[in-house]
Length: 157
Image 1: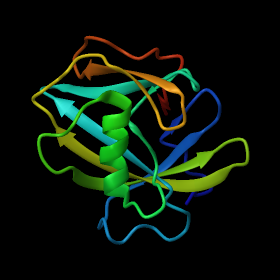
Image 2 (image 1 turned 90 degrees about the horizontal axis):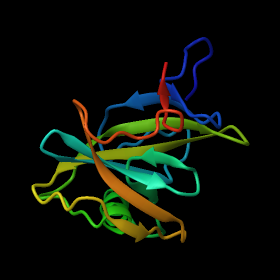
Image 3 (image 1 turned 60 degrees about the vertical axis):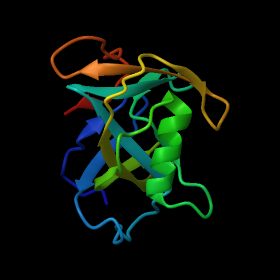
Image 4 (image 1 turned 120 degrees about the horizontal axis):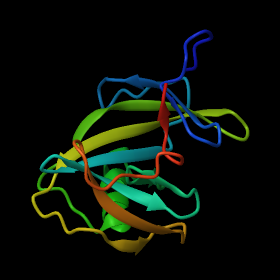
């Protein structure tokens, strides 16, 4: 997955790197690393929902681990509801696979990325993630509005 000499797409302050994004068929994931996670970008008008992970102290897209017997699509919908109390207006759209290299052991893995829309922006919500870590959500505007703390978010390179 990582290619020598190719800079990462983004790096967080702990050294986790987003090294690739691959469009492709939902039923044909990359085979060079495991696919244990799913993420979802849910849009309300011109804003995308972000959740604040209290453990990692950063703003992220809702998402998490794919549970045994669950598809990445099912995991994305479940995590969206658990972390933000939001539901999409219709089926989530498959976007592609994000490739990560994660610290401390530099393990490579993929997350399936889905997107959707909601007309029912419920505003900030507080919920408990499956891990017991609290999450707080907000809608982030493309052109302004609420913003994650830039010192904790993934930095584009």
